[in-house]
Image (cartoon, rainbow, N blue to C red):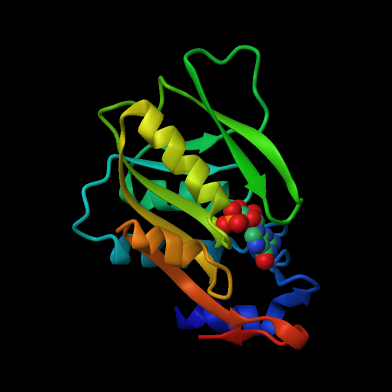
Length: 188
Ligand code: 5GP
């Protein structure tokens, strides 16, 4: 997606350890006009795929997911990183966080992810695929089916994309970063 690539090159910042900061337009301050176009691009790429629900993980996945849900007129559910005492029929999984270097539990109510759901997972980044694996675990526990996974940015120098595609999952990434070494952003 050309507009996104340009914006990453213009406003993205590189950090030690292969981390790309896009907090001026994607995951802290957000550009809703860009996000709207990102959502349309996801919708175009998953055209013809049967989907009845969008799922994401808090917090940075929520903005693109709700835009996709709005365009498709479908409900959006976000997986929570804190276990609410009041959640009923909770499903949970463990996820390793690449940016925080620790494991955490994620949960979703089985009321909102059921065996009748065909879900599209949307997130901001795909790195090693740990968040995605946690989602797959929850989707399997619910007996739901995974229609596809869409990421705003995929870091191709980490293994998540390869691992998910090897599982025959329909993965779409709107911008692919080939390299971040020497603090230079190489966008494919
Ligand atoms: P994964 O689970 O695929 O290893 O990493 C994906 C998650 O880690 C995303 O949900 C995102 O929040 C975070 N993440 C991974 N790499 C980056 C990065 O380079 N920059 C930012 N801002 N977040 C990242």
